[in-house]
Image 1 (spheres, rainbow, N blue to C red):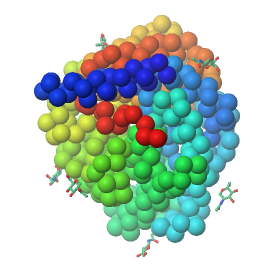
Image 2 (image 1 turned 90 degrees about the vertical axis):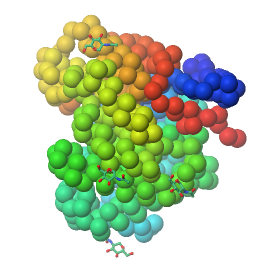
Image 3 (image 1 turned 180 degrees about the vertical axis):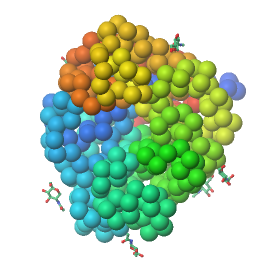
Length: 376
Ligand SMILES: *[C@@H]1O[C@H](CO)[C@@H](O)[C@H](O)[C@H]1NC(C)=O
Ligand SMILES: *[C@@H]1O[C@H](CO)[C@@H](O)[C@H](O)[C@H]1NC(C)=O
Ligand SMILES: *[C@@H]1O[C@H](CO)[C@@H](O)[C@H](O)[C@H]1NC(C)=O
Ligand SMILES: *[C@@H]1O[C@H](CO)[C@@H](O)[C@H](O)[C@H]1NC(C)=O
Ligand SMILES: *[C@@H]1O[C@H](CO)[C@@H](O)[C@H](O)[C@H]1NC(C)=O
Ligand SMILES: *[C@@H]1O[C@H](CO)[C@@H](O)[C@H](O)[C@H]1NC(C)=O
């Protein structure tokens, strides 16, 4: 909370001095991801939020896919997917809003810790795992069939208009709790870079749907949801899309985690008048290539911690705010692709320090519209 008040103080200083200074510099920030946040118990929520807040983290990215079993060693309170049995195509009674209602409570707790949610409204992962959209359209036609696009747009509209059970307003009006919306985590990644390039207009189409609900002055960002690496994540058709506020970068390869590699994308985005967020990166627990992390020998803690310092330092030096994949509220059990850092793990103090340092670092993009003082 100390750091959230300093960020707000920074924002009001900008308002005061913005008149005299021609160039308004804004500071960076950091945050994290937790795809299964809707399944946290109250105790897990408070452990996670207190720790993220102590690191000065401002944004937590969450997903809407159901979870029935424990994830990453975190005991889960199970919840179904938003469209558990069929594509709902806008029929309100067909959606199962459990996940949205779970997040209603969670976003209130998050806001009390100075953290806003970034809501990813579907994931490539769910599609690839055979969800209702895959069953009807398959993983390719989901992006190309006009019927798939319109049924998916109806899902986005349903989410954006979900009325918060406590606050009584739709999510699209909750700028004090919600940082941004994106249509899908890593849309099309399993289909390869050339497919993404050939169908990049899918992103702008979905962004127009989201923008059509939010309007132009919502205080909530419209984002892309990232691809697998730098060149895939930043497409010309994303940069020139007026419905988008932010292009999301996901990258895990060491070659992409260098200031010199990131800088040209910053320049492209600045020239296009759009922002970048480094929405996913992580430091592998194992001694494998950093972007190939399912199994291996554990790196010595000090080596991994130096990687965390280097990667975070490089991204921050490029001027892009970042979200770590992922901080978890328990000791990391080293399951699956292993970038996670638990709040009791030996690498947490290192990541926490890197996150705190972003708040003093200049950013290449001014995100202050998304951190304005809460309205009461
Ligand atoms: C972070 O989580 C740990 C583990 O539950 C807890 O002991 C600690 O108090 C938390 N730290 C903060 C700053 O909240
Ligand atoms: C969704 O509903 C529209 C009519 O409201 C219909 O034209 C379209 O085929 C439906 N899509 C699916 C996937 O059922
Ligand atoms: C939504 O899912 C929950 C949990 O599976 C279930 O209890 C509830 O009946 C479902 N609601 C609707 C409207 O289908
Ligand atoms: C919102 O912004 C877009 C792009 O700048 C513009 O075309 C549109 O007219 C604006 N909409 C409103 C309601 O002002
Ligand atoms: C945006 O970029 C894409 C990809 O290069 C291009 O096809 C499209 O025509 C551009 N749109 C505008 C409005 O410039
Ligand atoms: C960027 O990362 C490299 C290692 O990949 C490291 O040598 C360098 O110091 C880092 N730069 C910054 C600014 O942290």
